[in-house]
Image (tube, rainbow, N blue to C red):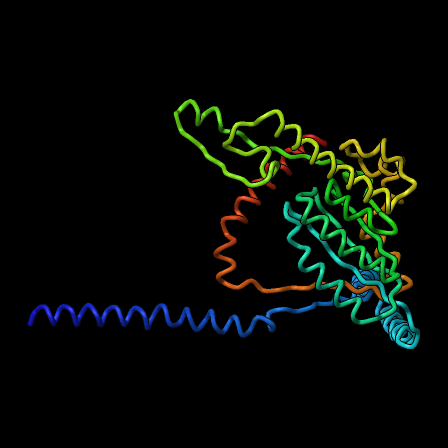
Length: 337
């Protein structure tokens, strides 16, 4: 009888835990799946109005009451006149790159929205910051930008800090590249590094077996012995990717002396202008404010809220990537002081 009582008590506790903990979590996850489409939003911001609003705030600081009234009236007239005039809009996109170019998913949606709208815009401006990363990720990002040019829309890439390696792979697709004076540009090269622990395994009598079908399925691995044949093939593959990179840059910037700039070197903005990697010197703010004097400038941003399960699964990866990025940023800052 005592056993049945204890068993019933245990069963009751188990059911209670399931009801109070697991069922709400299940309901939450299920509802999030149904709400997935609602969590995707395309946000727009009128930068022209924002610039004007800030400028007017500064203007009024030194004006008398009468002058403020006059300014208010003149602004109303300007607003009416601008509403009647049909200005071609300018759209602004932002891309902050990481190793995997993971922001390409949002970039794709932003480009989709613009192209599907069939709105005749003056140009699209891409604020780009990236030190590069995987060939696959940045190759796809560059291909997304090429869709803009294929649609006959002028594309301008603005670089305030860095567009190197994969970042420049994206930037060179633009009709025009604008760079800040000390931004880092270039690094048209390919790099690959794989640590090898074969000697450590051998020293500790640990066997490592790797079975493949295909002569070059694996050339260099982290645990296997590196052969001269494997090393040669690995270098050949890097060379082929570098040639593709050079062809890509040459396609969009045919006036460049590829042999001079495709050495993996970097140039600061002013020097990059001299060798032809960019077209003009300006900050992104300066470039956009000049456009805002003649056009309605809109910032387009696609946002997708991460689901809880995705946040949990990506947490470790994000921490690792951030750690690597902090190390790289520290190195770059110390290197280019």
